Length: 72
Image (tube, rainbow, N blue to C red):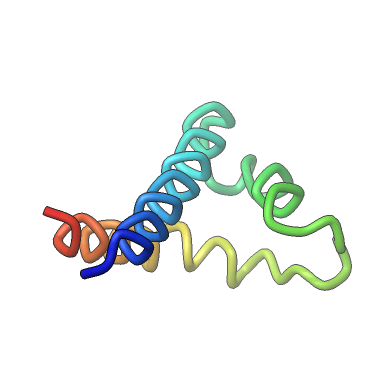
C-alpha cells in the first residue's frame, strides 16, 4: 500500500475519533447529532439526521476496524 493511501486512512481514523469524541462529550448520539451535523456540513437543511445516526451507530465502528486492519 502506498504512503499516500496509508496517510488517507490515518486521516479517516482521525475524523472517526473526532466524531466519537463529539458523541462522548455530548453524552449520547441523539444529543451529538447537531454537533456532528455542524462538523460534516454547514448546510443544515441538507443533512439527514437519521442517516447520520445510523452511520455513527453501525457504519463507523465497522469501517474503523477495516481501516485499522489495512494499516496494521
